Image (cartoon, rainbow, N blue to C red; front, side, top):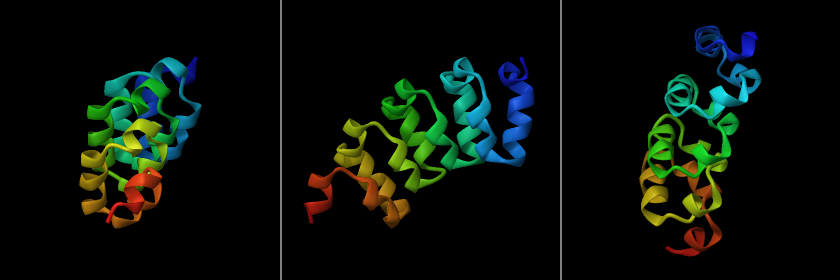
Length: 106
């Protein structure tokens, strides 16, 4: 199927990042593929497989593209002080998506 064709989906994503939502589940779970996608459009992180959203190293790289994509991170990562500080330094608006205890910690 077309939605499993890595190169075709990447080409679509290069033009419109949000098209990754129609990619096959195996592609959305593929770390290398999703990093390429997120480099094109950080908001595409919302469509990554849940295990990737819990992967700290993957998320750090993904969040360098778009800090507001912190909204898509797994809850434990939203409470990761070091990760959140790194993201907020790049984009202050990302603080909105941090865990409540971190928002209150001034």
